[in-house]
Length: 606
Ligand code: DMJ
Image (cartoon, rainbow, N blue to C red):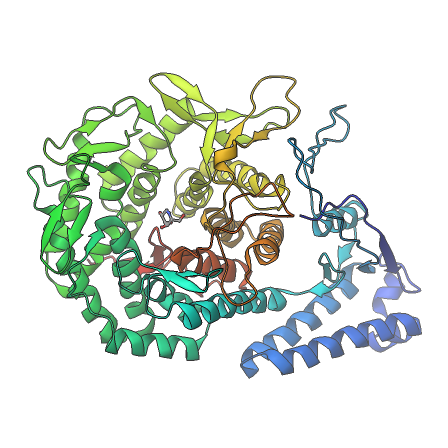
């Protein structure tokens, strides 16, 4: 990742001939104000407007959107005129630092000014430019990216669409109709044999307005996709990706094809619930109608059996067939009453015979438990905030998190969520936990205590730092926080945890935080992350790849796999983060499942 060690900015400040406090100056007509500007100033403004017009006409798909962009430019120019001197920050010579092989310590050392520590919280040039402006009491007209190019939200949205097109190009060329692209070997990998990436990406294409791509995928769904196959699928994964993806695409498009397919797969997954305890098995053969636990255990994962509810409940609502909802509600009722929780925190495993938690005493908000917490809140929202047991469990669990898992790192006091094993705290945090800032913010938006939002903001900063402190600017799968005084950095990464799978959780949370706070730093953080995905994971012949080592920018070591959630979730959340339209999947009308597929919040009568 670029180290911002050498930044050279030229700040051109145009104050005009008047002072904005001067009443006489204020009374002058616009035309006179314009004439008072120097030729350089006027040329700069005209050039900016002309550039935006040309870019807008050349690339914007609809006249309406184009108009909105022009309005934004006019608005920003006029508002700056009204209240502030004009300032445009131009990045003059931003040199790309030479890539160094990652030393054992972080290259981008944390350094907190004024603390005497040599540790520095890394900021990007955008942030620094903005901070400089804020300190001067001036407002930037344009945002500057790493290459010195003024970027607008329009550029960022287009960058996401480009990224999607690039990912799709690889999938289409080398993995069409298969589960996952292997972009380096230009081949594919099969998991369920159901076109997983294609289905996961359907609603993303719709939201990104990639209609041509959407239509070709829809044709495949209608002509090629069959669930009548002798294959074992994982109940949770196929529910959140396939059932969730089909249901949300049905809602966005109104096309009954997707509801028919959703009903088909939903029905084929139902045998999973035929267990002695009614806690479902992990695996189902969708062709034979048989289900079973993994070969080595009769346990299921707690997150898996408690994160299929949004989808099956919605399927019942749409089909008027109550069996789907009854099966998943029963799971929640049982888990609600179970012994073995600690302050609302749940263990990671549950037995399909006894219906009891197993492996007691281990608590995490990461893998195997994460979306249990997410779905407590989201089911409550989906059902119109009536199911109080769900809310109680959610609130209690958050208290449990605060009491048992929430700590501060040293030296920079980053708030993080660790793990507990038989009373022993471990400062380990999975990237998966980064769903939590977004979920907390969503709860606060729906009326839960304001301190949830405060905690969301703190954790968001931590999740961002998990990216910013790595040499590639991409987060590892797992980090360990330092807590002892005198630590020189907050985050350590074990060798085995240095991979990045193109996961969405941090981008997801940035989207929620931006929607609710409108604080632009969340967009800038997201933009930085997108650029680093492009830099270190993009494969020139098409597609993006997971990498093995986020600490080595010279050789991040591609894994040759593009997970379906990169298209289903990561790119969708990037797009929504940069979109100015709060009605583009309104959070007052939709709730996202854990695979980023939006499902409607039910009308209050239901
Ligand atoms: C996705 O399948 C879902 O977001 C799930 O909840 C967690 N794992 C991946 C993404 O990281």
